Amino acid sequence: MKIKKNIRKKNFFIKILIKLIRKFGYEIIDQTNLEIPSKKLDANEILSVDGKKSITVPLGETKINRKIDSLTIIIRSYTFGDSNDKQVMLDQNKKRIFDAPKIEYTLRTIKSIIKSCEKAKTYFKDLKLKIIITDDRSTSDNLEKISNLFKTTQIENEIINIKENEFNDQISNTDTNGDTISQNMISNMRNILKSFQISENVNSDLFYFLEDDYIHLDNAITEMLFTYEKISTQLNDELFLCPADYPYLYSTIDNTKVFFGNTRHWRSVNETLITFLTSKKMINKYLEDLKLMGTKRHHPMELKLHQIYEKEYCLSPIPSLAMHATNINSIYGLPPNFDWKKVWDENK
Image (tube, rainbow, N blue to C red; front, side, top):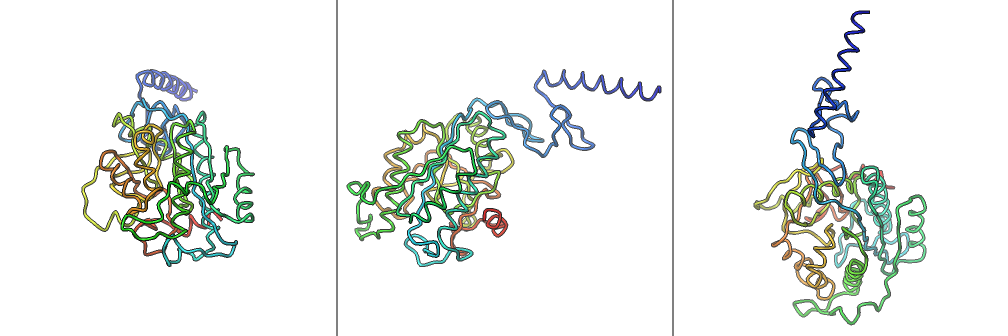
């Protein structure tokens, strides 16, 4: 009986101690089992609180002054052929990994984004989320498949069909070298212009511009949001995030800065494709430069974006949060040390 009384007394004092310590902004971690008693969580779980604090063991707490209130995801969709069309990569004759019909990459991209958004909502409960598909010339059958994916989610969504002659007066049919560009490239540029037009007219805190062949991990959106809040707070500035750890990043020895987000390391990069997350403030600041990627074919196509990265931080995660489903030899394709097949199968 005396032992039980002593245990109850000990537990009582522990609870009082925990409450006192929390008032000073600290948490107790039980080093025997790595539990945080006050939260009933393990130390390796997500401990951060959206808009308030970022917590990483053993680095401690960062108070957040850059709260995110809304995110609009714009997925640029291109599925020109029927459901069996293995449509090659833009302006290339290379096959994609798994050699599947193009619509499969689009559907798995969208499905992975839906799953990732639903998981993010468990941590960012007040976050306004919307997924917009800007589609160029997909068949009615493919559009129906895309539409069906959204019937199983409460995430707000919209499919916008781009007109074939839209932005024709803005798009040059020759590149910066004076060569005529393909209709596929014009379609791509039309879709880019559409996504930036939406970002001009939609009131959203963050925008995530995304190609339709990036298959995401289910924690991708959660990690990107927590990381944006934390690092934007630390820098006291807006920034760009890319979800992919591209192979090209390991082909040269470049100087970089390393940050710690929520559960990933992030490093500064100088180049990405036109898949990135940033704020409305950044879009307004560089809108005319961003639009140039849709009005004139540069070499590389993302040249104007790379020039922005010379002035602003763009960060890429290690390990990757998404698989760019390109040809296996592409330097802007499959991330290293990543289970490509598992992520592909999980989003069937």
